Length: 304
Ligand SMILES: Nc1nc2c(ncn2[C@@H]2O[C@H](COP(=O)(O)OP(=O)(O)OP(=O)(O)O)[C@@H](O)[C@H]2O)c(=O)[nH]1
Image (cartoon, rainbow, N blue to C red; front, side):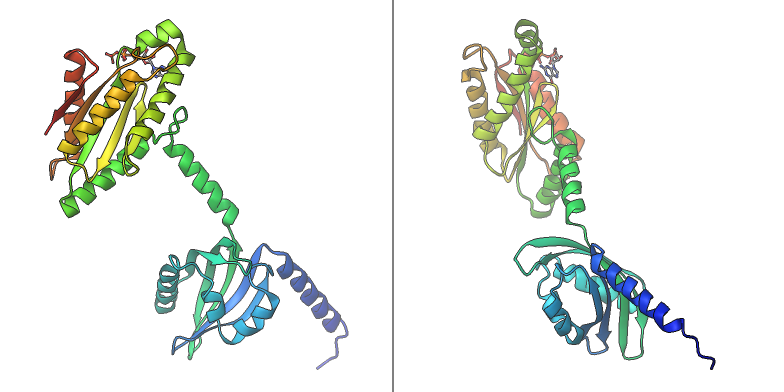
């Protein structure tokens, strides 16, 4: 074979480049091997030292359990199931999990890897990235899209999701579930007399009153305008009625900034009937609210 003096320096240079690059990427590149007996080890692991300490890497080359022990308990079964599926079907592994850092901090890690059958086990070639900032940003966006901007309560979209969840739980367990619909009386008059900003303040105060008067497990929301709703899980109508009455009274006695007794609300309540669709449940509470308005306002009306 003809000697080629350029091969060695070029190879050395590529290796140096590769080393410099892997040490700087915001994650790790790895090979993970799982033997047919189920033992896991990282034959290759390079990259961001904060995810795995240099000393730990040597241990992980023989036994990956040190790293797997740092995975959050809630995410561990999902990751193991994904590894199992990927090994069985030889399809790419894609998962996201929380990893405890040596300092105790938790980071979100996204893993993508391609499996390959090696005769005595499966070898994945992959990449792990620290996606904690992205996960936090997504959670913030989700929160914004679920929250009413003015009052900070859940918005209509979130309320409907929560109502669906509570209805399915009530169906599964046969547990009671009630709904309150709350509408401020003559709110247009408040806006017209005191101005829109003061009107907004009333809505914010009402949100705080709902939170103070109700229990931790109740779910208050602003449906829009001056209309609010509260989901009361595990609550029969007989328990919901005094709660609604207490809230109505608290509103009527509260000083919203222009003297107590100037703002009142009408409340319609209903208890979920097993099997009924969500809209029918809301409709029954709404009919009671409508009736409360027409019977003179500042009152609670219920429908069993
Ligand atoms: N300040 C403020 N006003 C709002 C907001 N959303 C809706 N409104 C006002 O709420 C008022 C609702 O008026 P109506 O639907 O006639 O109801 P109401 O005056 O409360 O009368 P009843 O419900 O029949 O007692 C309207 O004047 C809307 O402009 C808001 O975010 N802030």
